[in-house]
Length: 208
Image 1: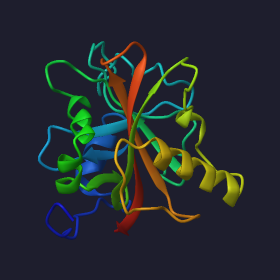
Image 2: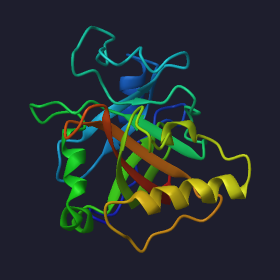
Image 3: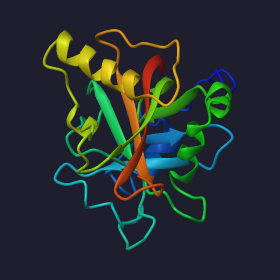
Image 4: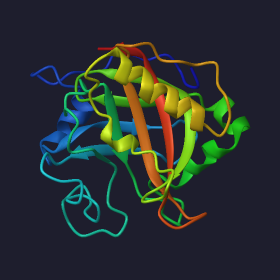
């Protein structure tokens, strides 16, 4: 991986990773932690089961913030058990939140940052990138990737993976197999109106 091997994490009495439990007690909407090594992407992830708009402009303390905070799609299971865990973050011009996600437009960057860490409250999870693409919301060729959360069957799963790989800016040797959990990171791209920049990865390691 792009980072050191995982070390055993201290645990709270309920089994939760201790450093996440401390934050969870302050906001029980917290579902995990997203990190891309050697970038500023290193944040808690929250989840509101009713709407994606709740944390659009709120911080971890639920106070107004233009930058918001990375949040899990409201359709996803907060325990990480959805087929596709979709996490949104703002592309802030000051370089924070998911701004550096756009570095994945460079194939060279992708080769040195193949892995994304997205821990749940109980497990350390590592995902390996297999596709990077752009799509225009409302465009004639829009890919509604955010609608794929849980596959009804193998065909639906494979169709989503095929579309991601077909649209990818560059090719990778990675291809998820049916049953493997996926992670989709999404942010706004300013190269055209209503464009989204999307990075998709497959779960390759899950440890306690």
